[in-house]
Length: 510
Image 1 (spheres, rainbow, N blue to C red):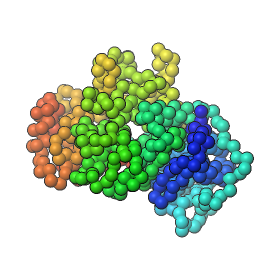
Image 2: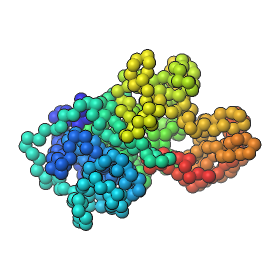
Image 3: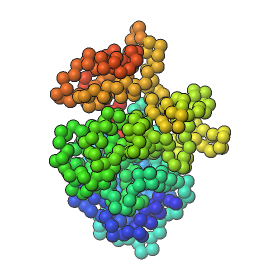
Image 4: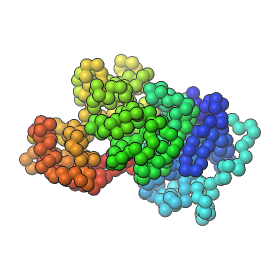
């Protein structure tokens, strides 16, 4: 099954049902299908076809959803870029992927115009903007798809299931982001899997303010288009009160968010201002959701169940914790997905029994094809499992497990702090600090120390009325953790730096 064929089945099944809500726009599956076919036809007329890479530099919008579907329909490869991507990085990514065409918007002109100057192969730029006019050769005004004619004999391109569908770029906190290559098989497999374990129904209303340029956000669109659920899309969650108002008005049943968004939600003293009684499920991915925050969310929104998930861009999702087990297995991210295999390995690559700690390995149809034009990096990540003869992927993440195979995130291998001759997981210290009343967010890392090797430092965001001081943080850690795990330094900050996808990052902290 191809990804766009999966969408076509939904259109045939329920053409007149509501597919997408964005601002004042409300599109049925049939209208979304019609506009994407019109756009696909226009793309073909520009000489773009199967295997060509097409960049999408767009904010969340109806046009972004239509563009993604249209690109897939002609067998081309979609490359969503974060709208905040700067000109130098954008130019480098467009050059590296030999992008044939860029779909973008007028408000981002300073970035894409400077990037285009260094990309001789980029033939056309389609620009969205009511008042925008072409200024240079190759710039094309975004077509009026509401009025566009669709060819009567249009047929979607039928590429191979293992053909490339998406190149999704990692956050790239160090160096140029890696281009994760995901095939139709990869994306269909994981979309169906997620829809099954979340029990997505046709009458569900999915609310998402996650960027469509980010895999977790894109997944919400794929879930809606493949199951027949409605996607209520917001540009961002920068104004959480506005987002909650939309959730209430549209009677959202599922809220997909990252920990930062949940922290913003919990910042409201009174959530009863909004009617969220229709909400049946909250999901969390991208970064670890502290157990203390999980408890607060369930107390504040008791009618909604919470599903904690773990994954990577390279395979979208790896595990989930069923909502009914949140209290029984606090801190766990689950036990793996149906239809995949996962296990732990030691530092020599040897498989470990459950109950041990090690690096997580995952295997299944959802695992990426590799990194674009990076065979050495691909070889570091992917390997052939001698037991099954199938490709498996090293996650680079350390986990501990219990004898039944339930997984507990420890740290990225590269993030482990070595202090006083001991190895410390920053995640474990962060979890402890997060349990202190008044703490909103925190990050923990190592800083050079002449005696300790690395000293542990915590960067902490607190509520305005917390009254917390450094000794409160350190005293709590000494009482709840082994002494060598307690931070030596604490810095209170107004906000944590973030990657382009919104994850808190230690880059830029000092």
